[in-house]
Length: 84
Image 1 (cartoon, rainbow, N blue to C red):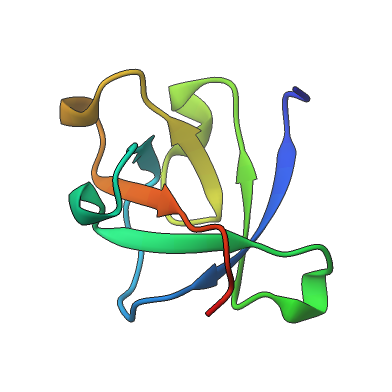
Image 2 (cartoon, rainbow, N blue to C red):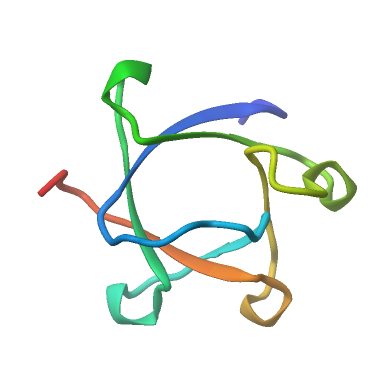
């Protein structure tokens, strides 16, 4: 996986994302947000980049650091299989 992975996300539920420390959960009911990765940038509501180091995700500039443990994250996300 590349150091910077461009993710194009469609937020299924409403809400603002101010946290940049993210944890990907296994089950939908554990998530604060549900996301769907799209192929083209113009299909997205939010564009973020996955960064390798936590210090790169400071502020709210679209850089997400995926934590190893759920308690280290500000938001938990679930990647859905279908856009709807």
